[in-house]
Image 1 (cartoon, protein in one colour):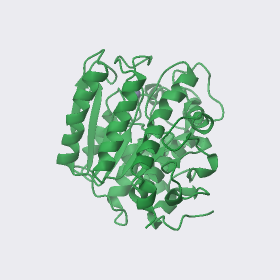
Image 2 (cartoon, helix red, strand yellow):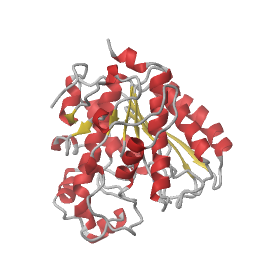
Image 3 (cartoon, rainbow, N blue to C red):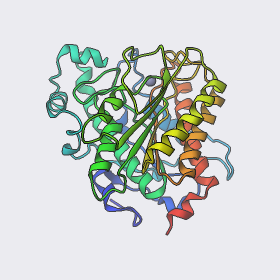
Image 4 (cartoon, helix red, strand yellow):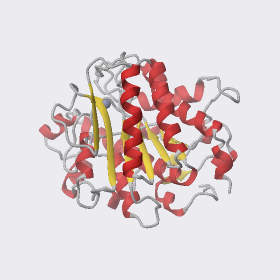
Length: 355
Ligand SMILES: [Zn+2]
C-alpha cells in the first residue's frame, strides 16, 4: 500500500490504495474513487436497476477521449483511489439502526423488506458486498474532498435508505453514513455537511437521517426533485424544491441557482456531498423531467464551480439513472466526473494541494 504523504490520517480507514500519481502532481483531474466491487459480478440482465452501470461508467471514463483545455482526458486506472471493501463496522450504526444493519448483513431481512427495496430473493444477499464497497467509496471521497478540495466516486447516492429500512433500490444510506462519520469524528474538519441532492427522486431517506438528534442542524439536505415522482410520500428536507413534470433546462437552472445559494448561505456547511443523479434527463425511463445532456452538464458545472468557488470541499457521487441503453447511461454518468476534472484544471486545484 502506498499512502500519499499529503493524505491525513482520517482517510486511512477507507483507503486500500493510493494512485501512482498523487493529486498534487496531477494537473489533469481531481481525486477519483473507484472499486470493481461497486458492480456485482453477476446480476440479472433484465433487472430494473442497471447494476453494471458503475463498471460501465468507469470503463467509459478510462477509454473515451474527451477534449479538454489541456488535451484529452482519459482516466488512467492507475490514477484512481481504491476504497477498502467495507468501512469499519461501527460506522454503520449509528446512524443506521443496529438491528436493521445486522439483519441486512446476515441476509435475514424479511421478504417484504427485500421487496420494498426492490432486490427480491437472493439478490438482497448479492448486494451486501457492493453496498459496503460503495459506502467505503463515499467516505473516502468525502475525506479526499476535505484534503484536496474536490473528489468524486463512481458510485454512491443511495438516498432512499432510512435509519431502519431500505427502499427504492437502496439498502444503506452512503450519504448519511459518510456525513455522520465526518460530523462525529473530532479529527475530521467537518461539523456541518450539506447534501445537495439533484437526483430526480426526493432524498427522503437522507432527510429522515437529518432529523436524528445527533445529526439535527449538522446534516443539512437540499433536494430538487420531481413533485409527481417517487417517493409519493415526501419527507421534509432542510430545503425542498419540487419541480413540475416536464420541467426543462431553463426552469431547472432557475430553480437550482437560488436554492443552492440559500442552502450554502444559511447552512454554512464545512463540506458538500453532491448527488449528481442523471434521472432528471428527458431520456430517462423514470425521470418525468426534460433536461437535455447539455443542461445536465451545465447543472453539474454550476454546482461544483459554485461550491468549490466558495472554498467548500465538494465530494460528488453518481446517483440514479435508468436509461436501458447502458452505453448511453455510462456516458451520462461520466459527465459529473468530467465537469469535476474541468473545475480541477481551470482552478489549478492541484497547485493548491501541493502545500
Ligand atoms: Zn433517482
